[in-house]
Amino acid sequence: MDFAEGPPPVALARLFGGEPFRFSFNLRPGSYGWFEPSTASRARLAERRGALESTVAPGLVWSGAMHESWHAFAEWAPPEMQVVRGGNPRDAAAGLAGRWAPDFLLLTRSDPEADFRFCGGAVCFPTAWDPMEKVGRTLPEIHAPVPTLNGELGPRIRRFLNGLRAGEVFERENWGLAATPELRLHPALARPRLGVTGGLEGVWFRLEEQAFVKMPGAEVLLFLIHVRVWPLVEVAAVPGVAAGLARALRTMPGPVAAYKGLTEMRPGLIAALESGG
Image (cartoon, rainbow, N blue to C red):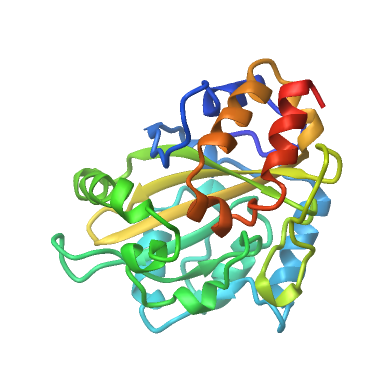
């Protein structure tokens, strides 16, 4: 996994193949490149450390269940990650979060038949959600505010997690649009929100690269999120993206568009994408 910053990759076109909008899991085998020494920029790591020190929108989320989950993660983690196996687990988690590019969340469950619950981690760059509000909740509970998501993907997510073998890495992407290039979209920071637009200018494409790994010998799941942001103008210039994104926006159910804050701007965006800007 290369965390270095760069232009939108041509591979983004696979997200917009021209099909109608639907929530899609689109999992594929991942690589241990997620755990190699970080190639993130100094500016990104500095912003992560700023989030970890914030009292308004704290990047480090901790609960009582985190101690056992952290030990399972630390025992498994490759040496390249410089995970501190001794000392205070919370300090070790903060230290790792300040020098590793992706956010990391730990989820645990009481037995293989139960749902995983979010117990904590480092969420420095949340996409318009408050991680503290989600502590202790199961995945279906976390996804509940998203219209139709549990109905469309809930059973598939459960089957995937129940069948995930320890140490395997799987990855996927999730996309959205934003009114700012800021990486930290914690609700407490009151970042600008999308409104009416007549074109692509001033709109940002936000890509979440995600990975899942189950820890050996424990019902603990590591969930990774790496956020990249580009001007929508640049993303739309990638061959195949503009037409596919326009179709996805046009066929997106109204409640989903409202949840994503796209209701007012959707007609203008579709027109701009179809006309080439």
